[in-house]
Length: 330
Image (cartoon, rainbow, N blue to C red; front, side):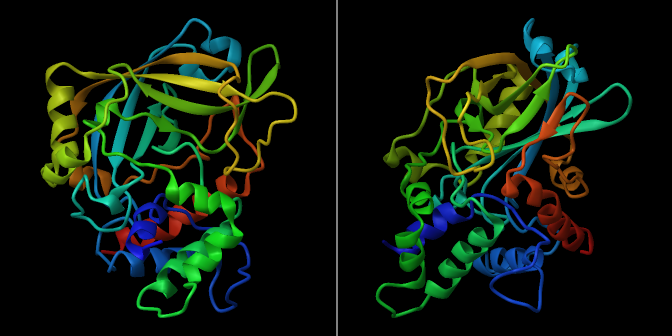
């Protein structure tokens, strides 16, 4: 398997943790992950995220469905709420072409701006899975990619890693076609959350963000000819003219389903509830400047939504904090 093809999918998420590393003693895993992501992107790139560096922000409104309140007592599931959304390409390369193989999976971050001045976030990617179940293994994967560049070893470090980690192998070999638009790209929450309604009933679920326009993708020939910024410019024009909509869905876990392992995909037979509609109809002025001081955080939650014990999920705030601190320093 070619290293270029592997790098294309291994830039999928920006993640770090502060737990002790099994790979090195001198730095916490948090810094090691950001360091490796930076190396793989040819950085550092001053002022940009270590991963999902290239992005664009738009605004709109989330309108809950009639059944959303039965799932959670969270404020934004009771009444319409303003939202801020950032789309992004994978990797820490600020000018990576949107259809480039290394720019996948795509990312979406949604901030619900609540009436009391607080906020709650959703952070998702365009693949319904994560390559590893723990932060330590994710670091091992990234380091294997790094160490394979220029290596003459057979098998290479990354081939050795994939040979012993079937979930990572499945992740890197899952097709990731270029979407016609961000407006036609589905997104998935690979981590599980616990939802509690006003009556105290709880359920575990994972988000799905489904485009109302339908999932539509470019042929390889069209992707090869796509303009470098076609997704970024297209989504801005769409929100300015006709608007863009998604359905926010929640796939519910059943007894026995794995809720603390982001590599495990639940069957399509699991019940799915529509939480509401995301309507995006305004571009953010000077998006590049506006997005720099913002850190989306999947553990920035509100009453009625709680995290699972997924170690990948629990690690992510520390992950973003390292990248965020470096970004603001420039």
